[in-house]
Length: 534
Ligand code: FE
Ligand code: CA
Image 1 (cartoon, helix red, strand yellow):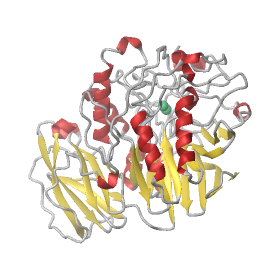
Image 2: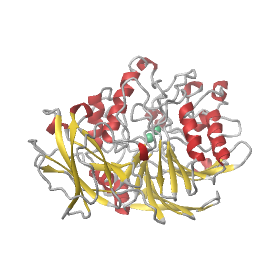
Image 3: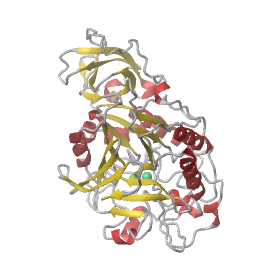
Image 4: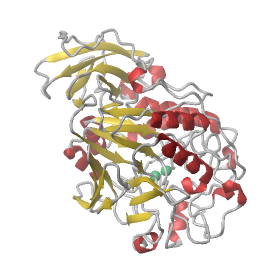
């Protein structure tokens, strides 16, 4: 049963994000690998063949990079990401039509204190390589908010704004997820860019892999226009389509991003090396390799390119002064397959498989890394950015409504909660995407101890999984505080040492590119507490 068929049935409660006909069964564990180095110690990715060390005080004369390109190669925009206290990654990707004739394209990067680039404060050159899709990941040193741009041939890119982390009194973090091209426009991103956040955290489903719906209408405002991507070329074309949206490009340029993936960057509800459809088992590892490579090519991440046939650890941490310690998790690559056939919206009691102690969400290595990171927290907010809903949504008969969420991985959730308790830290805040609704939940351990708060951001544009009107039903679950089902949007988190404020922004009509955006609720949380005011 496809998700659309499911909608057509008019189910009243579909607590199933990104569901599909996953009929796999049998717990298969994909083991984790070594954790990646902390971004502050990770060296520049291999593609960034920098020939100039960036120092914000160095002035370099700008010269044309010696290459002739027939058209503007910078139409995919610019971005930055994974900042630390001294540096940030700058990203662009040359538009393929302008770069395919040349294996190696010389590109210059430039920094300036003003948007007009009246004085270039630092610059360098690098090579955009065909084997990396002509993408560029350049680590530059910055000590304050800074403008950046790229040049290739006679062409100059749009200007982006990047920054390092800071030791200031507050930080503005926007949280985003789930931006299905076909089911809505990106007014949320226009509104996000206007807010000028310090950091944008993307929780996954940056693209959707579905085949293009031939018909606009029936809830679709535009079409993918191509079949389901399988190869590197296919996935590149899908990212190029998404980045053709000006509101998305604007948000990508306005502040550094910290990005993790969920399932749709590869395929709906995949688990480790297990695809949604059994028939794809043989080709899935290669398909996943292609998807991972192309994800890296388009994301401003401080990570090396993935190696085909190997795990690709993307879990990492980011410290924002003493205010926040962000742990960015990967709940897709190492997880056990969804239990009990991965059925969605079943009110039947679960099968025994779901309770098997070896079932994992993060994999053993990532779990160990997570526990170490918590032990190393030195005050401030501990923020866990991850994919699927962690709060319990379990009816009285113990039914599991969505086997793709943490409810379907109870042993793994117990392990994660134990790590939080063992670290002896203040309650955590988990920020979550995936489910296309806005929600506030409590993270409650088996003995009733409240270990933290979950703030679920709704989708930027992906269609609702739960029809509006089911709010009161969902709010009956003991660990759910509030939900909003009707609107798409994103969340503005403002953190100070004492207070966390989460402003849920809602797009009036996701079918309108110029839609207004308004506030549903501002949720406040005091440091050290799980008491919420809404
Ligand atoms: Fe999604
Ligand atoms: Ca998802």
